[in-house]
Length: 289
Image (tube, rainbow, N blue to C red; front, side, top):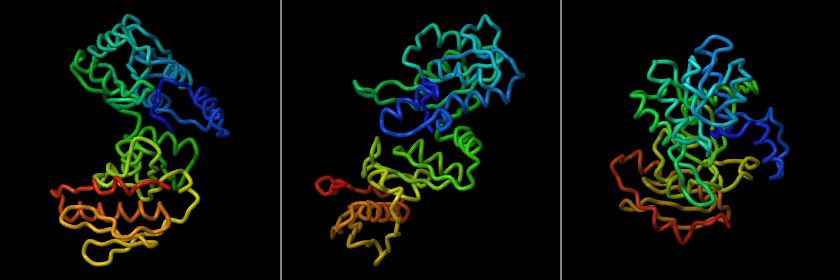
C-alpha cells in the first residue's frame, strides 16, 4: 500500500521481487488507483480526465474506464494529480487552467517532501500547493495516506475484516490507520526514530511498535505502570522524571524496551499536554542490537 502514484502496480511488484518479496501486481495498491476510483465516482464513464502526473495515474484511469488527457483544451471533466519526477511547469499550468472551471480535483497524496538519494526533495503536496495557488482552490479529495480512500481501496480489494497497517511513518501510515479504525504496527526502519515516536500526538500512535518487520511474528506484551510515572516490562524500567525520559534499567529484548519507552512517553504527554518531554538521554542507549 503506497502513496507513490508515479509507478504502476506492475513496476512496484517487480521492484519488490528484486528485494526478495514474492509480489504480484494484484498485491499492490497505490494512491493512483485510489485516486482514479475517486474520480470515477464523480464523473460519467469514459470521461476525459486531465492528468498532472505519471504513468501510474494514466494506467489507473484507464482501468476505471476513463480517458486520460494532458491538456485543459481537451475539455476534461476532472483533474487528478500525483507525483512524478518529470512533472514540469507546463503540466502544473494545464492543471490550474482546467481547475479554474470548477471541475473536480483529486490529489493522490499531500506529502510535502520525499526522500531521494540526493536528500529530501519536494513531494506531491508541494506541487499541489503550487497548482492551488494558481487555481484559487484546494483538492476536493485526497486519496492517499493518511486519508481514507487508499485504505478503503485496500480493504475492498482484499475483503479484509480486520486489517493491520504496518508502516514507518506516523503522519501517513499510522494516522491513516487511526482514521480508519484499523490496528497498526510502527516499525523503526524508515523516517520515524525513537524521539519522533515518543512525541507522537494521540492520532498518530500505533497499537504496536517494533524495531523491524520481525515484530510481525512476535507476541506484543503490554508494559505495566509501577507508580505514577514508571513503566516496566521484560526487565526494562522507564520513568519520566521532571520532564525527562529516563531508562533506569535495561532488559534483554530491544522491542520490549521500545514499547516501554513509548508507554512512558505517551502517558506523560497525556497527563500534561503542555509538557516538553526531553528524550535526549536515549541517544547513547538506543539501538535495536
